[in-house]
Image (tube, rainbow, N blue to C red; front, side, top):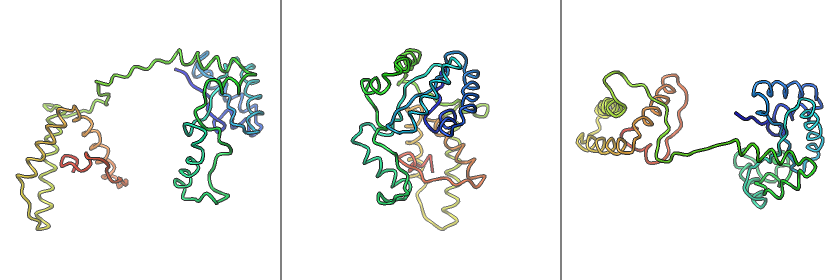
Length: 245
């Protein structure tokens, strides 16, 4: 496992920024002990903010004192520098503010984009080991994506059931409850239409290997409703299916 100390809002940098270096040092030592030797890295960042120069100097000193490696990183909130304006507008939409509002949430510079290797090397030319460690971390990371395999939690079903048969059982029970609701309201409907739709959907879900997914979603939605926890509207085609209904 590898852990990094995070940006200026991370516990280490935050304490340094508040001029509480002893606290920052203590926290860094705790994380290093938890993660083990060479598994915890202190982040250096440079977004053109005046405070970061001081923070970086103190973090480098903490790293030397505690023998914790440093690594150069950059907060990426958008892909290219030119996306800065669009990001500002999105923040306004998110927070219900306008661009003209001086008190709106905003970033201090247009440096929060995905920088190239050359840009990062130039920014951290005084601490080349911080750049070298980005490569070392990358070499230690291994990610293998199995696109032909579904990685879902194992949903426990009652004895004598499989995921497929339990989903079908619950779907048919649920549909019968919907029938009762419609009948109480005096709404006329054709059961054959619903039954045919249910059979078709269950067939698709089984062929796609999604019974477990539907049961997992059903479980936490049911849990929320039973405890009066608000549940938002569904999205996509699955939310409009008879099985989900």
